[in-house]
Image 1: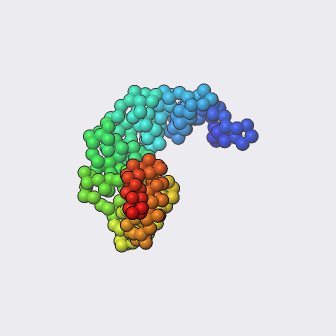
Image 2: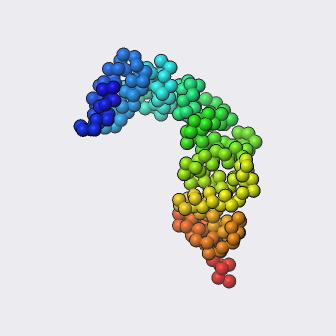
Image 3: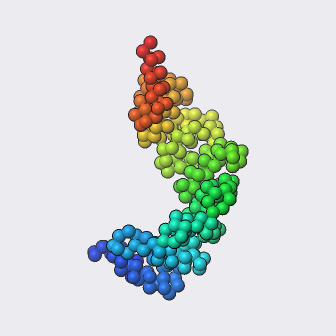
Length: 263
């Protein structure tokens, strides 16, 4: 408890070095949580306490006791070669142990290894299994990877409805790219079929956040009058915004639209 107070002292300020001393003492007594916290503090690059090699030592101690967070953290260091020799195959072992215990971060990292074929044979379908497990616990990056996997026909037959479900979860968290993709997939979502007006609403949310792809798509929607009355001026506005954000296709479409308007 005193070690924790050292990190959250309202009057004197956080004392990272002192916290390391006390968490190290608890770690030496075999407490896996203290070992994990001590390792985390030793990765801090401030107050001259950084020591990646010792951090790896304590993470491994916790990992060997079956502590999921320690397994995950040690896997990260082994995967990246920080404080210990890099070894993707060993990282896969530790991520797998954390994943099997239900740690979302471990499930996500384990999925990445299967996706990239690092330390394990590449297996996109297995990656999708672990991404989904982490996604169901709210892991944002896992949700993004799983939603994308639902559209990847190299994994399985594309499942637009399932992808739409997960892109919506991301969209509701404010992800502009997910809002764009969800707007495109919305007609395939369960219970939402034939709801292009709502789809436009999600695309607009992303466009208003400055997402170039959404701005381009919204321009097309107004140009073609899809679920909204056709409005070439509004289309030109959104093409212009997308072009201003570096979207070359939007620039070309704006030029073509301006030529047609001026005739």
